[in-house]
Length: 325
Image 1 (cartoon, rainbow, N blue to C red):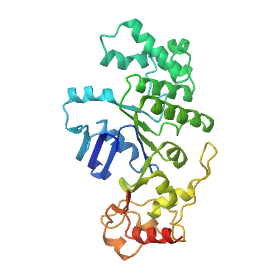
Image 2: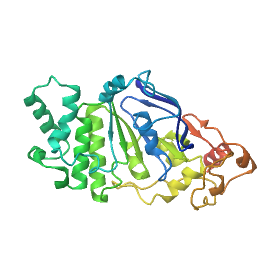
Image 3: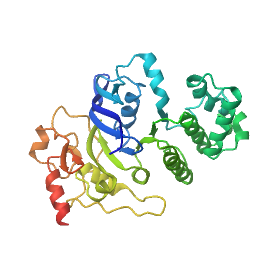
Image 4: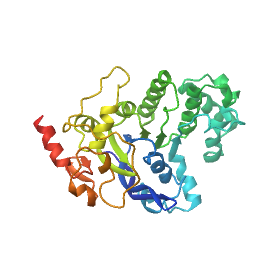
């Protein structure tokens, strides 16, 4: 097992006294990619932003190399951000429209390496522009002069210029054309292999997450309801919501075919998600497999098989059924 970088335990984030993230826990190790999938509004981005202190959290812990992020003093948190970088969903909105892209990429160097000479800084910026597939001559242009895919390459260059240990990708390709998505995903994979950066990759696109991730977590209404190694999750989902997501995935890019997800017959309900119930399983009203216990008892996230966790009262039954099939 590689070095443990980030340990999150019991993270909870509330907006207007409503929990957007509930009891969220995971570990992230050096060099690995951990995927987080779920439908829009499930709390994916809130998890990432809470870890980076871009939104406040109500309780829980997020330890970076054993050091608590959620209660760190502002000055210390600013120093830690050198190793904790993020690529946002909207590439154009994440860039200052009045700042040339070379200056935007150089800004982290000016903050964290102020003693670096101007010439050396410019050389680092030009090298990074080339690395993400942009001509260094473009450095004098402004964000509005670039396409969405080019702006996202700038955002990636800005995040990677400091060689961070963790790159959080918050839906980095969802606003891009399909033809560009594959280019950006391949770029991220290449950069990770080159720099050894760990990635926390957030998306509702299962195909992209499957291509990049070693482990995958599934989030529903702010809570992790399944977590497993990539192939284990795709081959044997143990939560009906995960099975529904897999069934809804139409195709996987780069020539691969989606895996068949064995689960008990009868698709889960496709109705819109309800408000968070006061007790019981949050998914019960959409689920085709609910039982009496689902009405009153919230299922804990339990290790059903080695490394495979699910929060479903029937997960062991589904696991046995998948073994037989």
